[in-house]
Length: 496
Image (cartoon, rainbow, N blue to C red; front, side):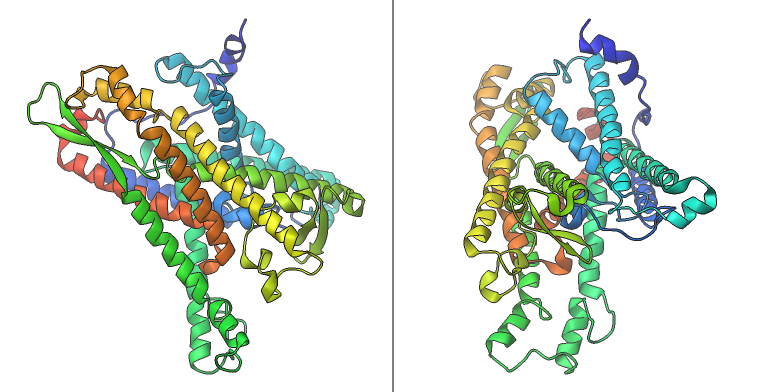
């Protein structure tokens, strides 16, 4: 008996959101999407019952792409979903699952069930160290005594809330994918990053402690904030960094422009219909063919590595081997300053590498910073290309799957025989190369954005994801509106 036969009774009975029967009107899709977004914001503002303090955010700078909220019901965010996707991507890419998700309906059901099962497992494995290690989600000992369950009992209550929150975000994602517009994961990332961007622009906490760009420049223009003597080193540094944030504004706008431009750069392969004379179309192979979503997988892998380091430090403390990691306690948790976990940590801000301006912590040599920057660049560029290839192959966007889709739609490439193998060879001229180039480019942009800083201290990856997902969401909304206006096109593309 193979693993599929053994696991089928469990995987086929995993709870699922029913698919709509027939076409869902565009307005109803928008309503479902908006409703899920409101539920998401509501859950991120529900604080965990039983906490004895805020604790440190174990995801730290990864929070903008993990989504969710520290100390809330959605503590783990989309982390388990992304981690489960990484595992399935690797297993599927190595052909270890033996599932034909393109042609076999039974294997499709098993794959979906396996994905949900892995998300449940990853939710438990992610939540357990956060709750029971003590430093990240500390339990209220007084509450445990008053309830008569002790500290461990309160920890179990917190764990149950975090676990349920992880399952809720899984089904919220599924509702958006089946009943709404876009994907839930993308929607949650946009929501989290947009909050940071708006806060970075509009936040106003009073003069002298301003955090928003508008408040800072109000203080600068009216003399409440000093930049130092004009045209001195201190003045230029204040204008570029804080409180002027000119470099952050420039970087944010540059990322917006580059991503929108890259999304519009494409190779268009002409197509013609075999039965309808004069019916022509084009198959676009975009520069960012695999989208920026594989970047979630790369950053999530880095987040999991740092997650392991934080857990080890919380258990070993100063007894942790220096070669493995050297940590320093901070107000928000701990900061790695040396060892293997330091070199594997991504560059998150200019404070991580601008030693020549005195921004980096003391005791770190320039060669160590350079090595860390180099490793981060290699990790993101190579990882971006590799995960982009996996993404294309496992989501039916590869040359073979694309050729079959064109064949099934009744289209062909003018001047070539109507044969899937012929179309596949044409696609192989463009798709693999564009996939690698696009994945590497996105990885490079993510690191550069982190190094220069952005509005609201949004991570470069989070900003890239937000711009790209928003652009694709706009395209999908435009397509939905077109389908709504012309029902015949909906029938032609099989969306009825």
